[in-house]
Amino acid sequence: MAFPQTRLRRLRRTPVLRDIVRETDVRARQLMLPLFVEAAIDGHRPIEALPGVSRHGIESAVAEAAEAQELGLGGVVLFGIPSEKDEQGSEAWDDEGVVQLATRAIKAAHPDVIVVTDVCLCEYTSHGHCGLLRDDGSVDNDRSLDLLARTAVSHARAGADLVAPSDMMDGRVGHIRGELDSEGFSDIPIMAYSAKHASGFYDPFREAAGSTPSFGDRRAYQMDPANGDEAVREALLDVEEGADIIMVKPALSALDLIYRVKQETRMPVAAYQVSGEYAMIKTSSMDDRRLALETLTAIRRAGADIVITYFAKDAARWLGT
Image (cartoon, rainbow, N blue to C red):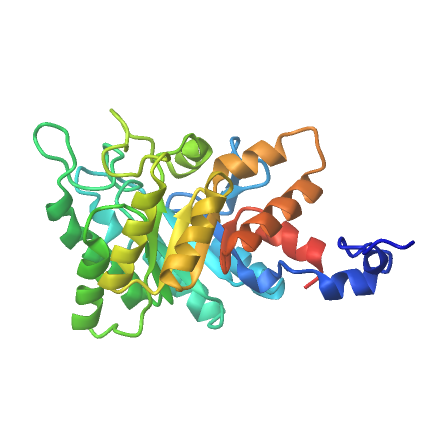
């Protein structure tokens, strides 16, 4: 007697049929490449904590964006390392700041490349926190909103296709949306870091971006990884304030939240496979190609429409799409 083959074994024996019945796919256009752009360098400089990843000068960033386009990636996400820092993070909203210069250069050379800009102050402040500080060292949420909105407008003015506030200040999506609209940028979408946990997986990024806090940590304004319901509430609030895409970060330790946020919001969802997740795979003794594609598939299967990943270029080559 033949038993029902519920696991599609017969189909899996034929590669073409296996691909046809596969429930989840990963394609290059669903992936975005993070780029670290530094004002003070020419060419590029490898980042020790992130094997295969570099900081780029402006011309090098333009070349990376061109390669991303050739590989069919969905776009690039720019993170700036300024030449100088101060307590307010004033280079964040400077129209001649590093992200603004890189955005203009990329869009001039390759107009069809989607440029996403990180909107935060941590890379630009001398203290490394994501907002202005009070005298007692705590972050002043409300006073920080104007500066974040100014930064988003400056990025839009430079040609950014999408702004991505990553600071986790309360109310910043609505504040940025209002400022963009009033400055004539009502068509610029917002990709909000809505469920961003205070995670140990960020450490290599902080070395790469020079954004490690000089004191304390960010647990007062980033989320407790234990709180799933709070993550969903934050996502829903950002939708109400005008977010166009909701992001969950990190990805692998929050697959359940990617699914829940997608189900609850019914909005486009992005997930960031962060630096520690990348480094964990890249420096292991296992097959990094197989692990990268397996984890990217899991993130997509959980519900992510977009995956920001340092594997983006490699994955595009491996996938052949």
